[in-house]
Image (cartoon, rainbow, N blue to C red):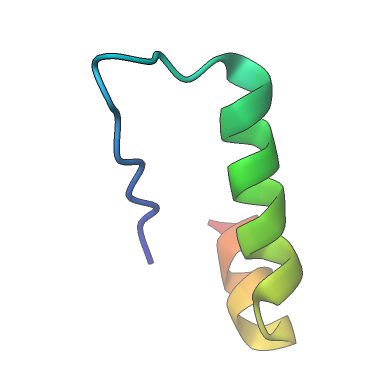
Length: 40
C-alpha cells in the first residue's frame, strides 16, 4: 500500500499539503489497512 504523490513541478507541495494528503488517506482506510500501515 504505497502512497503516490503526484508532484507538479510548477507548484511545489509543501509539507503541510503532504501531511494533509496522508491524513485524508488514513481517515479513509479500513481498520485492517490502518493497523497494517501503523505496524509496518
